[in-house]
Length: 270
Image 1 (cartoon, helix red, strand yellow):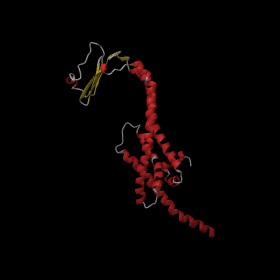
Image 2 (cartoon, rainbow, N blue to C red):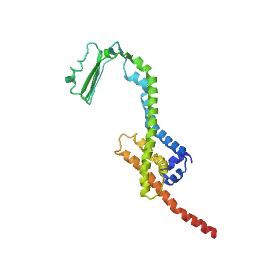
Image 3 (tube, rainbow, N blue to C red):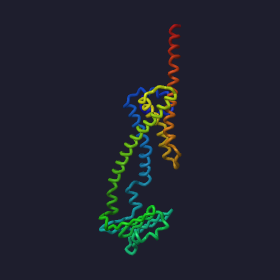
């Protein structure tokens, strides 16, 4: 049976789980990788594409929102001042030579009304976060940077994003198969309670397919503007429920077997 068809059947046709147990390990592993790819695409690739379409990408963001600036020889210059104040946050970037902020150890009393502060003048940067105020002079940094250099860095930024996504996918894949391990252990308890004999390997195979519905729901929920309390428990609970329903179908199938054999013999003697 096609892997994609199996994943679809795993959501609603629980008698199919008995057939899944006949699959070879590499096919079960492929099913898990495909599920991870689908979840990764929905939760990371799609949002990134939406971000690219909505903003026009990093280059357009720089062009539209970041004014020309340059940091050279310990002195910072920006094309136009920036000031923002809202919800306990205050940002002021002004490199006019006549506009110099006090040092970090002197400015505390002027920032008492704000939780977060970001101040930059031509010679230093001052940051307040969680009650701590820190300052740094550009002359101590030995850094030369500008808007043009930032623009030239964009291709590398996309490579970094790609690297982060590859690492995120590998983490998701590892977490997926670890999650299946938990589902298999819970499935073993369920099978014991239902008095149905299955090996841990069989339960692990079933666990891979039992993750289909919860992962799809988790991906859909990630697009909602709100979160569902304790969904992590619900998530694994759904997987265990799928295994319980599959075991129930297996028990029903086993009970029908003797009746089917007897019926065939009866027809033979007739």
